[in-house]
Length: 120
Image (cartoon, rainbow, N blue to C red; front, side):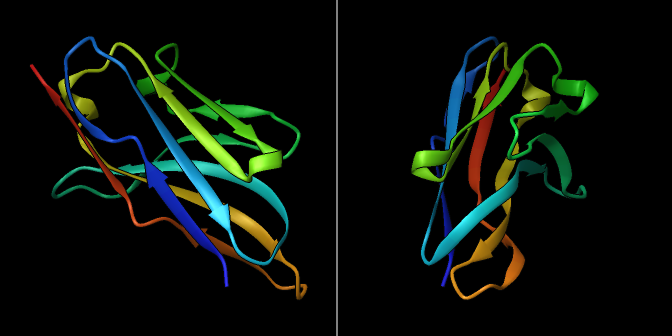
């Protein structure tokens, strides 16, 4: 069984920074793309940033230049460094990963979400 566990959310003032972490655990063979999504109240879940197994990255236009995604393959962990935060970044942030398990199954896995609140 595979689990993704996020941490690092919280309350921060506008202009501040937070670093989210998401650790995958379980019977993992390999992890392909890892992504961060966010969902604000009453809105759809949107992709924020993604990183491939080869460390190629892409970002939503709204976070380019402010957020940075990275990963530590030895720890099966993906990070999201968020700088210059704005009130409109307030949302629940979810990590997502495409994982091959040790019993040769592949699937998309989700974390439970972590709340990020940016006050003005």
